Each structure stands twice: as C-alpha cells, then as structure tokens.
Length: 198
Image (cartoon, rainbow, N blue to C red; front, side, top):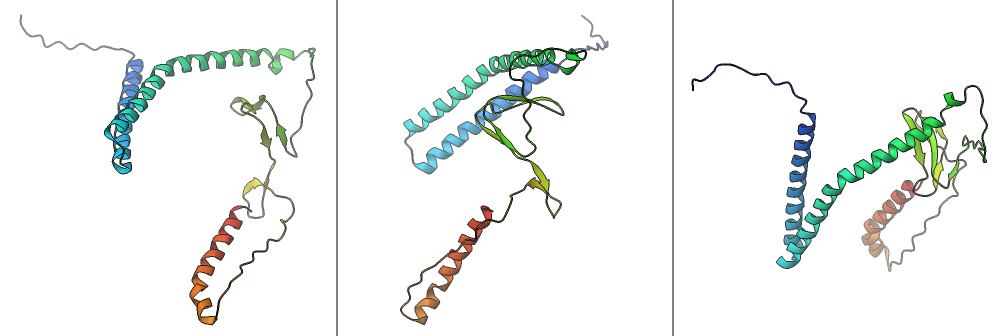
C-alpha cells in the first residue's frame, strides 16, 4: 500500500480529556508527596518499617477513597446548589413586583451596629446569595475607617491599663546585672504578647 501525503484535521472538544489528564496528574503528584512525606516521617521519628508501611497504606487508602468520592460529592453539591438557586429564584423580588402576601415572621433584622447570627441565614451580596451561620453562631461586625485610612473593626473606648510586675531577687548589684538580659527578654516577650491582644 503506498504512503499517502494527505493530512487530516480533526476538530474535537478535548476539554473533558484535558480535565481528566490534569486530575490524573494532580493525583500522581499528591501520591508522590504522600509517599515521600511518610518515608521522611519514618526516618526522622525512628518508626519501625511495619508502622511506616501501615501509615502509608492508611494515607494512600484515604487518598484513593477521597478521589473516588469526589465526583459523588461534586454531584451532590451541584444538586443542592441547583435546588437552592431554584428556591431563591422562586422568591426573587421580581416575582412580587405587583404585590404578594407573606406568612411567618419575615422580620427585617438590621445589623448596622453589629449582631450575631445563630443559625443558617441567607443574605444577598454582589455575586449572588451567601449563606452564613451554617456551622454555628457568627458575628456581624460593622467596619469603619480609622485615622490612618485603614478599613477595619473599631474597638470603642480604651482598654484598662495593664500593670506588669517583675519581682527580682538579687543578693547584690552584680547578681542583678547578670540577670538583666533575662529580665529584658521577659519584658520584651510580655510587651509583644500584649500588643497582639490589642
């Protein structure tokens, strides 16, 4: 059969294949890092070979399980997201443009001065709908711009003065001079800790 010089151009959407290849590459990279991290841990901690192999098997089986469950998790998350979007779209403002009746508390709660959300609460924001309080109570804190122009949470009033007392017992001036660097280090640590808690 003679060779042909013809060229065929195939136009195909390969995004799915590329995504699968990227996922496979990421998995092998993660496998390698888990393997080497376990071996490093075994060498530095002095664990037995049996303990090391057992730990590696557990980590790799967890990695395999997470990889196997990822599509299921993504599907469930996507379904829940679609359900939530449909529920929110059903209550969109345009739906009641000519009026509507509401039942239940439906109270408006203002948070201009801050507050606490104690349970799952939906709120609008620039890119859609947000959910806060889903894992427990969350605080809403008003932001203000300080004298330096930075935006942040303002603390009202000044804190109470803090007194730090060091009791030094020295037999004479020479023993005090020898402990002076230790006292200076303790004072510096105390000031740093206090500064972090402002």
